[in-house]
Amino acid sequence: MQSAFLLSIDGYPHGEWSQVINTSYGGQHIAKLELLTYPFVWRLAHFFGNLQTREVAYQNIFFEGSRRLGIDIPFYPVGGAANASLLYLILRVCLDSDVQSILELGVGQSTLLLNELRKRKPLEITSVENDAAWAEFVRKRVDHEVIVAPLRSATIDGVDTQVYDVGGKLGDRRFDLMIVDGPIGFNVRRRSRWGCIEFARKHLADDYVVVIDDAHRRGEMDTVKHLRTLLNARGPCNVGLSMGTCAQIVLASAQFRHVIMF
Figure 1 (cartoon, rainbow, N blue to C red):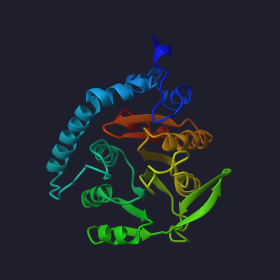
Figure 2: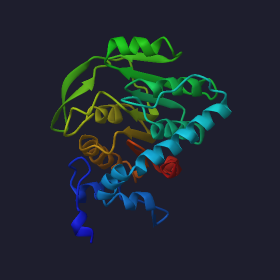
Figure 3: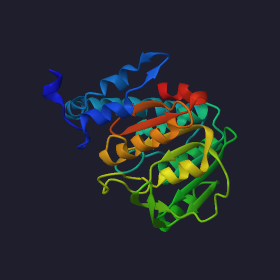
Figure 4: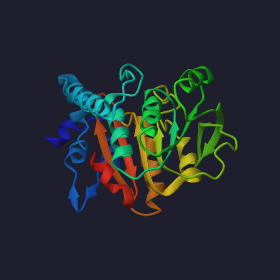
């Protein structure tokens, strides 16, 4: 039965997808990750509307959590914006872990959320965006640092890619949460957002959480696989998954391993 459904998520080979997300917590396989080692489930879930149902559940949880925190600005988790499962995940990680410094690659709805959370918990936030007009639009609505960084060509671990050119604006700062939702990745079939690897090497703290959006796409999964290999060299890199209409992969060091269960 299994062999009849060895399909791919956005063309990503079944075996490699399984290798990337299969993980364990306390010796027990995480059921939702184990399930996704059969990528046909993703296709079927889209077809039958299960992911839309999950997205609505994430929306309800997120909006209720925001209301209880007194956050009264509007959020629009539709279209190309951050979807509800990403907003929920950011909310949970920031509130239910000890992260203190955040590097966000790509700005939008998530930036507005981070700004609101910063008013309620001590958080140091730096957001990076290559689109100057969009960065300015968002900057007017937040109180934290938004860096406009044009994309430059770079070769990272043998891969030609585009990376945010922040110059020396980040200095030697280290961040314990990195959110990867930029630059635009839907038009890059392989090794999408590969430039985040450079930021992870230079600016990711020893104890860390990395949230990678659009992890259902082949290009992002290439990057997840390579980044996880690099982080495993520091020590065990724990992996989690959130799945609404878009998927997010969470990579976490031992100190933050509980966040993979969110």
